[in-house]
Length: 241
Image (cartoon, rainbow, N blue to C red):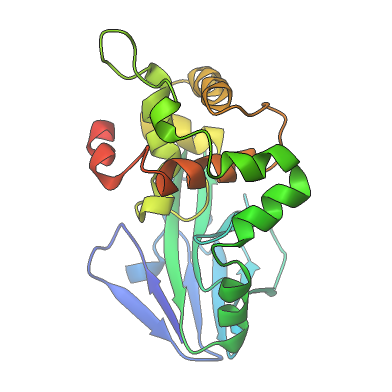
């Protein structure tokens, strides 16, 4: 079964059994309403529930959308006119970007063996496996250096400017906002700052945690380190307003 919620409609949700569908876009009512922005199509896309989880169809005449997994670094971009595309994620968001903003739907899958296999395959040990495969030094960074040794405060005790951006990067992993590790554009929207500011902050975050800026996949590992070792907690989210 598929359960769809929309942060624009608190308390409202829609349950879809296999073979049931749900459209989303700016002309759709209820859970499926995505923004009023003209870059969002009236009928932007369709969700299709299945025995294996769900599939997505990009039906809009403008931009496509992204399906991001909440428990893994996986992101699927679905261009306009593509689908149905089967998605194995058990806990995900469909994210529609428009201009410098975005809206999203949250999707939970229950009773699907395929979705369960995906989640189980990306268990806690996944970070060690992916770290070893991508860059040997990452494996050590998952446990060291201790976050207590990361310099994230200035001499006067105030956090560096980049720390709030790190908090925003960790929001989805802490259960807030759309699934997936946020892109620079999403961080700029969340922080209400220019994109170039976010780019500087992200570079500082990489440096503070000992990563090269060209390390592919490092952002996801950085978020996991920060959350797992308590550098960023739900209590820190209040700093974002």
